[in-house]
Length: 415
Image (cartoon, rainbow, N blue to C red; front, side, top):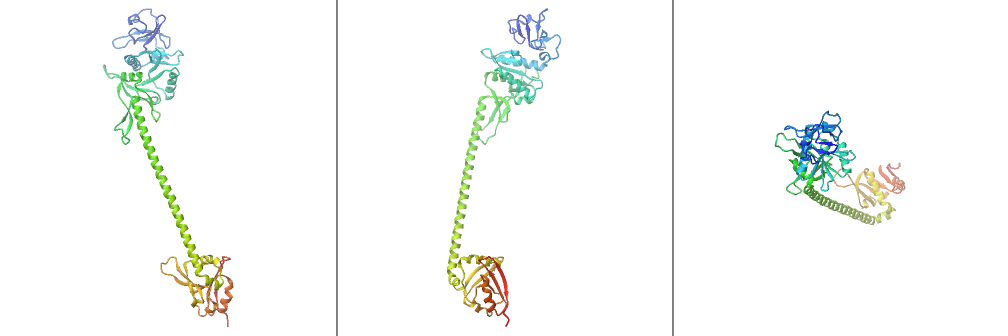
């Protein structure tokens, strides 16, 4: 059943209007014999019908299987009428079951603006529809400059991608249709960043919601997650204020983080520079110590014929050969004017012990302690040591020129 019919002379009739939209009374079409009325959807013959229980409408004598108007449910029929009556109560001209000239859409209720142009379709969508279909049908309206609001009784997937309202059917006579999903407000109290903010659906009479939509008091809003709903501009402005506050707070946080990173980088750079200065200072100190040591041993080098330029290498070879921490002592007349070497194992915390003598005069080898190592810088010292040996001697030949090390036990020459 539908609310509209077509007469060959009178044109389009709308049963929801007192004058049927063409200046006629209901009695002019209801139970009038021989009257030829046609369905605007399928062209089949229809008749006027009304009673105390049934709102006046037009019905097919034989219900065609593929005519949407003939096969719509009672809920769909009632919701269409409620949408039309709500639009008219809000002061707008609204017609039921209006099709485009190209017949590529048919609005359950079409609302016309002050220039008598269609601008808003109110669709009672109770049958299943996919999100893609909803977007495609909404696009068809948009191409003709018509906005649309889809109205459903149940939760539908498409209501998240197109402007829509979800309503409740009145449970008893006298109650109003109620919107309980699709009309939202922005809840944020107190208006500080610490307070939680959220979009929440409100409940309101369908008539109020239709009036707000048609009057522009609410408009389509697309949330950050892509969900579409209706809300007032003031709530959008409030959400924008919150977003700006969050952005400013985030900017402050990022600036503070950047400042911390800058300070950390400066501190790391300062620490690196300090370590470099400390390393340079220690290197200078070591160089000064080595220079002082070279100056201290200048007479020793001169007397023993040693090259001071390779002394550092010789020191490293002594340390490596012994596997111990070492330090140089003084020239010892008691040890043939040789340079005393003191050593301490790395894993012990005691003092240094005399471990060897560098380049002692061969004349001092008489009575030389068997466990006191003689250290020489090349093989040229061995013949003199062998000639002077009176007891077995331990000799370490550490050549700083070739980098070769050898450890020799020299026995006394046979008499």
